[in-house]
Length: 227
Image 1 (tube, rainbow, N blue to C red):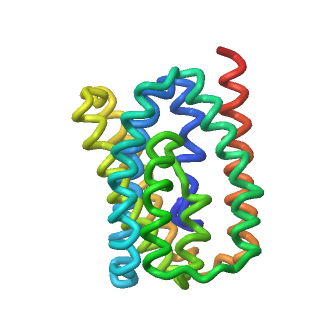
Image 2: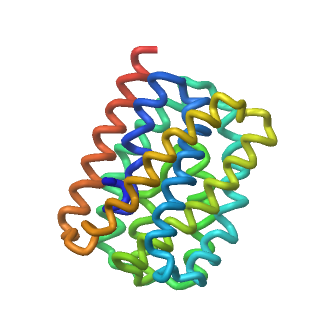
């Protein structure tokens, strides 16, 4: 539900738990399946608000980038993935604030240029919501339009990740079941969140995102030091 309100955050909240119980190599495809269902819930809830031009420009390069990122992830040691996830989430706090202060206005070409590296990073660090939030809002999307378009773009990227995991044999049946379980809860929460979005203040949104990134990043780094 919280993810449905702020437009991101499900991966940041769930990843420390999934890594703790299943390890990073399983946690990433589990979260990818869950994220597909969670974003699908947002797309259904805000279908009429989707900016298809912005979504298409972003996905054109983000999807190939995600496929390449999956190949890279599976070649990395598990301990390194834990550390990379933790550092990334914590580092995104000042990075997101820096991007927001610049108030840069993006067009479709900017979305296409940004899509490739963001898609690649999404495959490795699971969630790049802290980056995509200022990217899509800088294009001029707000509230329902932002939630719907960001979710549609993320849906395509995560679907590409799942296809790549399956092709590489990293998607056994037990991982699929765990992903569907997490995804069903995320999808349900997205619908309950709709009524709250309109009343959400920008300052509250920023604090929620920063708090999620900090707690998740610290949790993952703590788990990595214990290995």
